[in-house]
Length: 218
Image (cartoon, rainbow, N blue to C red; front, top):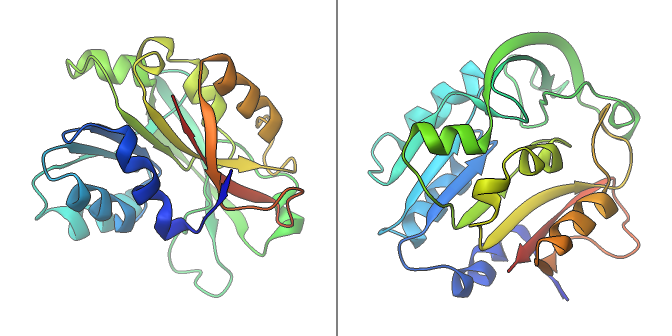
């Protein structure tokens, strides 16, 4: 098991993917990681999902010149429709939303970090399977999930596409950061039941922070 830093993830996953992968990044925020993936796989396509309007505008401004990035102003979820989205803001930068917003209401993370959640907006949602069907996409090679506790629900709701995925980089939680979220052990057991193995992570065992990120491959 490799203990790695965030900037090392793509080099670890690259051997498991084709030269022209279809990538889904959910929680793309400002497009920083989106652009890195698009540059590493110029023959592939990165589908970047960001439902928060302010962040979606920032994502578009930062990636509009990159031909192999497709932006989607919708949230991946476990059902298609609309849902409440809990905006997160850093007390030092209250003028704009940060990355910690979620479809799930915050719980113990209110004590674990300084982020504040004072506004709820409505956002469109879609399942991964429904999105793929609507866009004539029959497989996804790489999932990059930063969904603040909603990752397992999203994956379970889309068995068709999940059966095609080769690698998953996902956020995991070690406390009940959000209401109704999955635990790290639940997510890990689910992915192992599908034939995935965790090959890298950015946290210690036992963890010293309330969340981390892990790379699973099949």
